[in-house]
Image 1: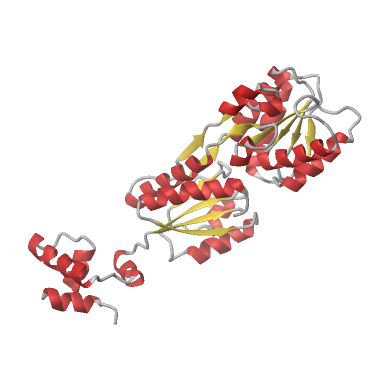
Image 2 (image 1 turned 30 degrees about the vertical axis):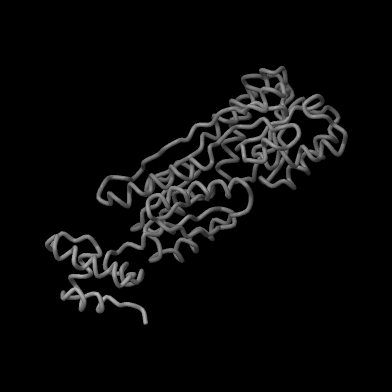
Length: 340
């Protein structure tokens, strides 16, 4: 039979309440008594029941991560960063997906209440109204890549605008003027910011060239379809900037199948720097987001709230910078590309 807290109390010749206080680090006992209790705990190999312990401490030592999707290299890297940081702090991780549906954010967050001490919520559709009405007010929450209108919760955003602006300037600096973009899904905060960065960079770098926006939805299939559409254009672009790497990969496949050479005929760039970007042929020029670090920073921000519940946390905003990684798909020499 499993060892119970009563067994520990009997062996240590103390009350059950004393055992509970020793296990939870209360200071209301002598060092000798605590030592005797913990010695019995170790000898009997007693493991506190997590549900019972959480009723006492009001902590589950678990955090929730609610993401738009769980498929693909971006989310795999993000979860890896979250998990590493959580384990380093002795926290367990509960992961769920909203499948890109704003309504699912509320349902999933309600399902996590009582099971987690705090939540990381990545939803580009979370706005101030949704957060106010549907996210729990009494639970520490950090929003990732969410519109900045929300003032109730801390937010951690990638500099989508700055990264896109810098990439268009990079392509223009290599002599390209007709630069197309494969945009992300509509009503998506990340996609809107990257499109805004593209438009404003085009207005500055090539004001006499009309922007060329091809629809996409952040999937490889949409990148492939966009590649087919640009191949059918009478005047093809000199460069294509995809709003994420996986769409750039889809576009690259379409170009390769048509015998269009990258970068000799059309330069190509993406956004995110997912692991596969280095291994396609040619290696993909991209805007690097340190995805695992984004997850780690989110956990650190949430942990500060958990450890300092009385501290003022409302409205704290952070922006994670990006950097251009130039590789072979935009004409960078092979030797330089391999070092990235």
